Length: 175
Length: 227
Image (cartoon, rainbow over all chains, first blue to last red; front, side):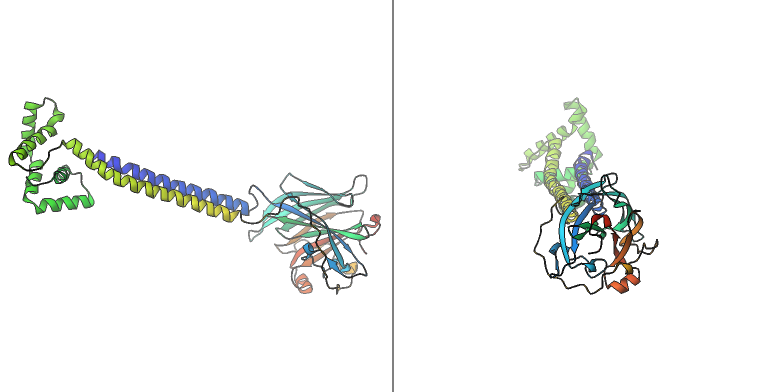
């Protein structure tokens, strides 16, 4: 093949190689971003959802806030009450070294920090959370609670008295 | 001479070994099907012609790079004498013209294919990214909207804290769900309730807890944990 022939072939091959390389790089970047987002390591990261629920026992008709329809009201200890009201609902960014501080309606403070994220044998993300409920100048209501929770699996801290009822703080990690 | 200009150029390219693939087959067919083409091709490949060219070149062109022009000039002289309509062009110009024709066709295809690959790459990347970020996310710090309460059936299980499980031993909870590692509330009584996702009693007995309730007695609050 002459130099002229080579001169007409090389740019064609070069363009094809560049196009394929660009496609591969774009796909790798997109797939990497998707994987990070799915594992909670993306730009948004995991979040902590907090529901503050007031439960009371009354002689009136039973009722529940529509946003609490998933509350297991037939199971203990929720079956002690027949009126469930959503007092507050907040969502916080959750990250290691970034504790969440949230002022409860009764004057106490809820502190939650992410200790780490582990993987179960099935590859499921497990979030290690440390929770406190404190009140300045008084004994700690909850000095420390260490919980390991799967994503979207709520846990509850109940028992605080509030306006004739009992507060339940529901905490859920969203990936 | 009845060969066209394009045929002459193709024969020159064949003699120089520049043709490949379909072009090579086409010109070889041309040479095989025409006595004149065979003669021209043989003359172009002949060392005698090369010597003649060198002789003419030495007489007319002192520089060695004028050989091709000398040959073409001689052929032009012969064809003009025969009265044909063949036109003689310098071989360098003919090669450049042929390469330019081939290159123009190829460059359009190259641009189209490269553009197609780039468009595919962008589309694939966009599709993957959109798919990964399509999960809805509630706005941060969104306050609850108080909806109208709905009726629920009265509880069927008697309310009694005495039936609650105490702290569950380590390893009781399945890999998924919620596992309580430690509770520290020395000033209060603490009970841990296991919440199962399915049938309460059966699931709890099998250890399939999906959630827990940490119930802390709060007598100082006035109302306590019990209504």
